[in-house]
Length: 503
Ligand code: PHE
Image (cartoon, rainbow, N blue to C red; front, side, top):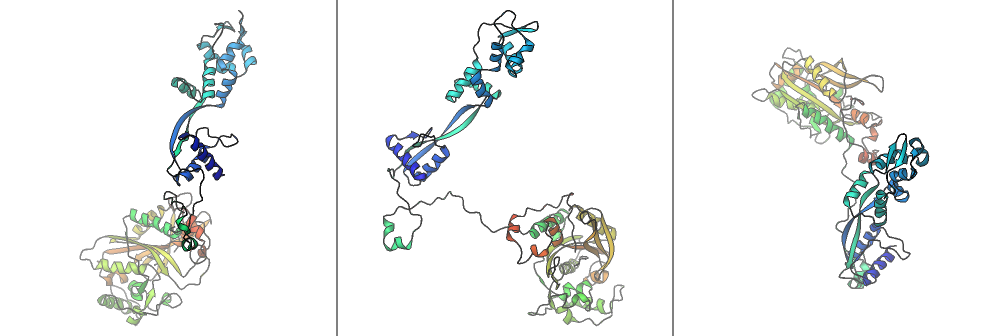
């Protein structure tokens, strides 16, 4: 126990200061581990009762084979002694029977030392007696843990008969507060100590500013954020710029009307969309552009017959929680159209969207969308397919298939499918299309400019990646925080485990 060890060291120091802890023993005479001694010294050092210096020593120790040779002699010596001092000597074939393995290992060196030689099929002695230097060297090392000739230790180490080790010990001397007994130190200042002035006579434990702190429990990335970061890097690699998606509230205008989504569309129903109560509306969208949107919906234009209904600004002004990130894409494309000179543009976003959905194992009322948008002159459906192949290929998802689909704002539209090895079937991993002229031309974009776009959810690939089968284990109040802390970083480029995603 630490108190007895402290006493032991202080008593020793009282007799001899400084002293070395090398070979320091307890009362029973058992040698103490230097690591244990160091702990005791540090406890005394913090009270300034001792000081110490670290002494590093190199010692040599024998390997198992080395110890055996120190005991029984070297293999070559065994060979020599096995050969009788007669003229006939010993038939070579007899040697292994007498000394076993040593016959094979020791012969070469016995020849080299000119101790024995071959005479026909026999071995005969060449000298009367030998000095087994290897054994003597090893015995010196065994008994003193060192050797006078460093060349010898080098050679014996090469033969794996011994090895060197660093050992640490301490040179201890008295500190300024040296005493033979250790007084208990207070660690906390209490109300009692203050009230009865006890603090004046007490000795307080010093702060240890070198002690490692407790690792903080916070600051872990959610799996969604990790996968999002991987998607972001793929977009950046492909030259995309990130769209500002930091507003969850949009007007229906950007979320629906600008996207040529008619005002009676079922998605605009309260059942699918969360509308705001306060403030309930906003008219902060370009009025001139709004007039063109109104016209294309109600009367048509740009080669379209439109929907032929009575478009109402009140409907467009309704504020909502955006139902898709395409609301931000429409806003960005409008601003792109206002540039005096058109520049080909690649944009992406990964952020939260909201839908008034019945919550089940795979659906929540909010999720994340990953969206890519490319605007350039003369883009074709082939360009869209090419981009999708490259984009999903970077996640390890190959062999895409496409199925015609419908979106109010894209024509043609395609659902994206990928073959899921685990499920053994084709699964939908995203939605895509070319934005309609009824959407782009009212914005004022050059008629030659085509815009291709695609979207997918972030939750689906994340759940697959982290082996989570219920969305409520990933998002919401049932999430296990240990899972968030312990889950590994995300790498998508694994061909062995292709990530599948779905809108
Ligand atoms: N906005 C679509 C959705 O929410 C995805 C999409 C984006 C489709 C871009 C086509 C083009 O499902």
